[in-house]
Image (cartoon, rainbow, N blue to C red; front, side, top):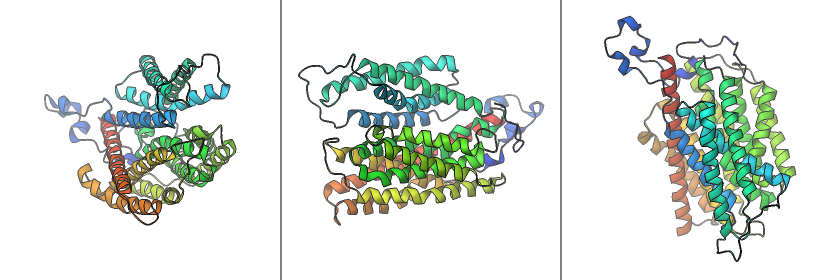
Length: 428
């Protein structure tokens, strides 16, 4: 859909992106006839940069998918293969389709980095999804509480295909003739939303067995809704992509996807939190949008983080207080909870790096600031879980969370580098 808003020019640097350092080089803005011979080689490449970002996100997503699909991690040789050829329910099919939608979305983003069109993109996305799904199904042969089914593979491939189509639809709806349209799905704040999906899966996996965790699920959802509403108000709304109610509905549906592992066991909790997420997103999106400008853009990102941070802080506080007991539905909750904590600190590291981004620090100089935020939180979480003491096992957990925070900061710097490179390519 063409964008009719006149808030940004069709060429040059969008003021909403100049805060990210996307100013064109002198060679990029010089008239063609005034460039020295061979200057073309110095121009920024038009190919989207930072291909490692989508790959890093995809690897993180696959790792969490393995946790979701292989719990309770009780591996042993089967007495007989547990393969379902005819036993399936509509919910199983729908759940397996939805599980791989984010996988296909990120795969499509990786293919877009290589300038592949949709026809070229879909076969490798489907093949990669089939390989990943088949591997998971084969491993499930050694998990007595799991069943292997070829229908799951077909449903996963269908979900990945839908995810790739969704990415292509979103990209086409964002007007490529404008810089903000080209980068709409790549904004650093959107990275928080992408990281929230696997974290929501881990939280929902524990919620299915322990419904008393519903406040954590609500806090995560409201955090995502606050960020999405702000992005809608600042970027997507003025560009005519979605209305505030439309973004609210999309956020509610997206949260159902995030809470998918708990949908069958806790449908009321999932539906209620989704309504809350949609309402907050709508409310945030309906607020007046500030005028564009570099200084306003910097304040917008920081204010968005500050307004969303209380929800995530409440989630981290509850994460230290809630200790699920082992039960029949999830025999090894400690493993899932550990991975959930690592996912939470990955998101925390990304947030901290984005909050400090106004200082324009390289990654190696930003890491100490990220750790300065993560260390006290990791120690407090360890103390809360171990009743006032830190055992050697707890220290290992603290070390793991700090590595995760460092990884999250690295993901932000990849994202920022990608946006800057694409903006320079767009203005060349």
